Image (cartoon, rainbow, N blue to C red; front, top):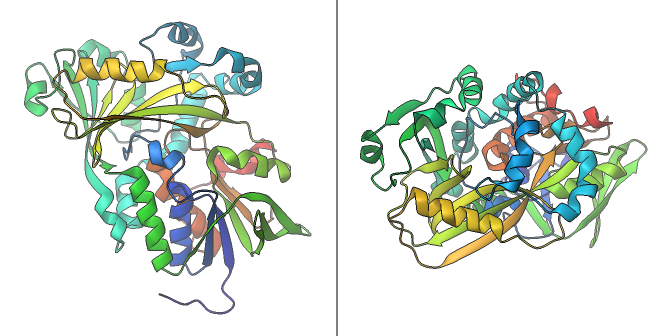
Length: 418
């Protein structure tokens, strides 16, 4: 275990998902004394249930041109991956209006340019984060495949692929009989593949984050399991994080609590328009005759990823808040599309999960300092938290410890919502 000088800064990181744990590791590497706090064990929140893809090409926001026209029909179509708890609509509306205001070409291109620096080298960033760590065993570099019914389905997404091409991602197209040569387990509903290199996946997202947290402790970091209620300021600077077990004195703090970051930001005078994108997954345990790499099934806009426990199918966007239980229709969609895509799939038990992605109204995360308080933010990554977590942690730790990068953090400033 390494030791720090007596005058080393103490940083409290609030939130032990992939973003918070990545930030904590990089802060330790850059010389800070770090305490990581969460109300549950590391990797057991939203980071537990993601699709496991290191989706470097995921810089295209959901709010593309035409969403306003398409959304009503999607909500009424049982085969579309967009769901709404209608009773939640009045509460959702202020956020939704801001969100939909970005569904135009200019904003979509601006958002894509903002997301590219934090997702575009995801596989390399995960390898860098895990360099010399036991958690490296969970990271599997490889290809990422978009599965389409035919070439026309691929061509219908020319706008999104154009944005990816501008970021340097040009797919290899595979059609006809060559589809089954690439992956024999695809059914007849798949006739065109767009294959991207330099991606990868994680074999067990929850286990990965837990292993990273264990590596962090081995590096001299501390973990506390408790609820965070508030932050304490001495003048305009943070002096402590207030928890259910009492105050924890610190020199700086990082808010990386995902969807639960909003109340802390409100206490700092910033009302971030933050909503939960409820995401769903099913793990088909012990699966056989599924994909050998991560596949984005275009027909249902979900990812099928081979993992240690089996085949995980994850995706869906549902707006319904934090309090109501999971819906049944998203699970039914996942099962239906999986049977169509991999008709020979065999498996054991099916395990269902629903979690809460933190969605800002402008589709960009909050990364940076809140005024000059010594409080920093690292949340709001929508569905790209696993992809962008290591890069976010590295950028923020560098900003805090005088190890800056050449990445412009202006698009992510939390003060943009003041």
